[in-house]
Picture 1 (tube, chains in turn cyan, purple):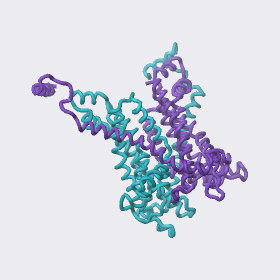
Picture 2 (picture 1 turned 180 degrees about the vertical axis):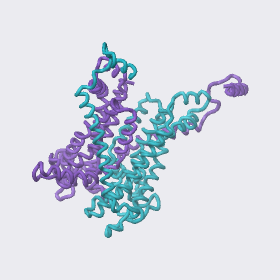
Picture 3 (picture 1 turned 90 degrees about the vertical axis):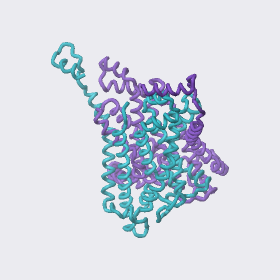
Picture 4 (picture 1 turned 90 degrees about the horizontal axis):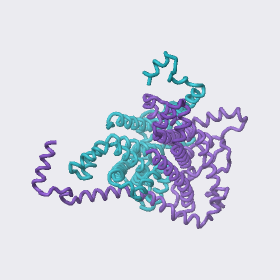
Length: 299
Length: 321
């Protein structure tokens, strides 16, 4: 492009070079930047504000102490930290295998022309956009009451699993689709069965993409508060969960709890806990981006 | 190559007329296939579960509250005596906040998509895309905190001199909506950008060959060609705004309020569900059933929007791929 333009600039007759940017073009280009400017400056302001606001309480008390209402200076979020680990850990154990299996079915086994496979696909796309609080209602009606699990770690994890399953499936399918057909054909031609092809060729090749998707889905589960509000996550819990049927609270809910408290100390504490949560999420995001850039094979 | 020939050679030696059928039944394959189908059916079970969990409480609710009163009533006081179950105040608050959020998110999201798709150089894209992903990954409870503690005080200092006395309330629809708008930018931007990426390059090249500037290509070729995808992105953005809970629960207040003044506090449908669902609501009580009635309305509204947008996306994929 530049090679043809450079000589055109010196020889005037019949230049194929554009007439330069008109004013309208320039204004338009700057207007387009506005969206990015707003998004980025919003992000920077938010992070700065939260850090400055939480700075006085940004210390080890957050994960060493338990929540208490009487003495804000001693309050911490240890039970929420452990609750998050329990709930999200259980969610990962449930949702990752299920999600990958469903994605493998849709991508490697299903005939996309059959109506029922298309129905499953549309259904998953719809579920991905169903508001998270609706999952909370589902969890309340069917898992907490229907299955009688009560307000427990397991009920919360099952609900969150259903919530992130569409995300897991969609991202895994994208990773599987990025593996070229020639690899499958080669494997099948050598006499491998469909499952052998999937298990020994396709899945290993797709691992970086799948891992990225799982990390992003789990980071969504970590930050999710709305459905757990309905599932008893707001209970005042001053002990760490000791099993799947234990009471629990999680970090976003603990933060919400403190925001709802008009006392200034609790607002500061909420801000400090937000910083801890964001650091965790940013680390997971960075890991996902790193995995994607470092290990993603281009075919 | 030679080793393959050797292998087929020995295999052919043991079973004379080289059959292409499986040499033995693969039972494990069938079991695995079945397991994979079951995993895929979990998603169907989820939808069925949502519907099933809605039915009994809604039957109970609408036995006590006539549906017409629910949908057209203008007073929402489910916890007072006498209780009134007119859902319009919650619906109007939801609509107002969604509308204001989209006023922010639609133009900015579209501009971002167009910039990333047509203007940004690869290096800038590599920085900006992860930044948008980070913005999309921030928990909504954090956005809510930011709306309440930063945006609301800011609005109060800015708007006070302008409107002379009529300052925003501590809990108000405007700050929740503004923050929600920024939250939705990445959703709209990434979906619209996908649609723009699906526009064949030959269309752009044709326009450039006719002497169009980049702006003309963007507005007269790319946007019209990607329009159904862009509309789908907007609809999904609206669906997200309608269903967003934590921001409104924290920053918009808990007062059912049939008002179109964004400076007042108001309760949305999601805000109501979050507020009433926090406690341990006794099963079978009217309060418990109310959660499901409002939830059903929310689910139906978002469901229709999602299906509409999924269909649109399908259509433009079929046109260009």
